[in-house]
Structures are given as C-alpha cells and as structure tokens.
Amino acid sequence: MTIKTKITATITILLLFVSVQSMSARNKFHAGISMGGVMPIAEFGSNNPLSIASGFAKPGFTMNFDGDYFFHNRLAISARFHFGQTTTDNEATYQWLQNVTSDYIDNNNDSLRNNIGNWYWSSPLLGVKVNYPIVLNKIYIDGGIFSGLNISHPSSQNLRAINKVTKKETYSQNNTNTIYSLPLMIDTGIRVLLNPKMQIKAQASYYRAKSNNEHYIYTISPGSSNIEKLETFKVKNTIETLNITLGLIYVL
Image 1 (cartoon, rainbow, N blue to C red):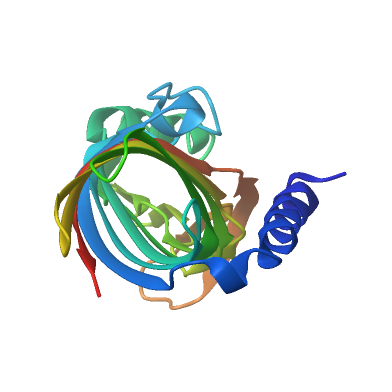
Image 2 (cartoon, rainbow, N blue to C red):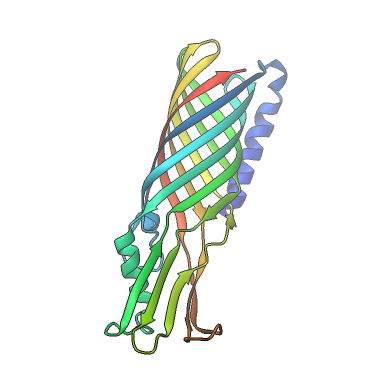
C-alpha cells in the first residue's frame, strides 16, 4: 500500500468512525491564522554540491490559514491553506552548477555568472484534527493529518558561461515552471482557551512533498538564436521541513 493510499484510507476511516456521533456533537466553526519558521531537513536542507538531490534550502518562513468544523467535541474536519518559503545557500548551489556543467565550460577562458533564487510553495489541504484536554475547557493537546495539492516553485539555479575568445554562451539552468504533487502534513501542538471566542496555539508541523524538475545545459553561438542542446537530466528534489508556528484561533 502506497503512502498516498494510507493517508486517504486513514482519513476516511476516522470520518466514518465518528459520523455516528455527529448528531450529538456541538457544531462549532473555528478560523485560525498562524505563522513562524521553517527548518529544512533531510536532502532538502543539504548543501552538498556533489549530490544531485540537494535542495540547498536554508531556514525560512511559513504561514497557515485554517478553517475547522467540529462535528465532535474531540474531532474536526479541517481545511488549510499552507504557504512556505526558504532562502538558498548560494555558494553551495553555485558549486553544484559548476560541477554539473564542468564538461562544457572552459575555466581558463569562460566568464561565469549565476542567478540563484529561493524556494516557494503553497498547498490547499484537507484533513482531520483530534484533541485531548489537559485541563478541560482550558488547555488542549491537538494533532492533525492533512493532504491535498502541493504547488511549488523550485529555486532558480542558473549558470551562464561566456567564452572570452569565441563569445559562445553556455547555459546551465533548471526548469522553474510550477510543479504539482501530493503532500503530507502532520501537526502536533498545544491550544489554550483565552475566552469563549479566542484561543492561542503553539504548533509543530512536518511537511513533505515532491518537487522534481529538469535541468538543461545548452549553448548559443554568437549572432545566432539557434540553441544547441548538450544535456538534460532530472533533479529529484523533495521539500521536507519542520515548521514551528504560533497563532490565533477565533470561534465563530
């Protein structure tokens, strides 16, 4: 059974299990906003210029918008919009670009220029939240699992080599078109009720989504617009982060 199938089956079973109790539940809508820091982990946070899977991502920023429907006192259906952004280790990325393009550049005669950008992704998500009271009607432990659609824009990794003698230009760049994939997000946190209408929450989340793209190496001769393709290969990046956020929840 694949991870995608397990996520879908788990959410479906939970919903079916508690649906019989929904008639006695107090129907409540919660709207929340939270923000905080992103810590890239695994290959996504690696700065190894010899690894094709390195993401070269550095710590960044995240924001979540949540809408929860409590059809049971301990369970809620939750819709979330998740946004994440990280900066990039420019030096390590530049070294990686030089490594993958080494067969096509002349270190003695080529003038090298680079353009390296940040990672961005957003995700509309649907999931289930559970809670357990530490102090009834005051402090709760929350947990959640989500999936949906990951919409990512990989870090631009571009190298331009201009030969001083022939004026021939060699380009090494990745495809930064929008990439779509199936994500997984898992939460745990502590929620404190300030009053009947407002709550605060500290939360830790794990997020994972594929963001594969293709890298192109090609040349353009002086006075010509014709592109000579030299090499194309797939880069298998995976966005993988730990997120720490603090937010407010409004009971509608």
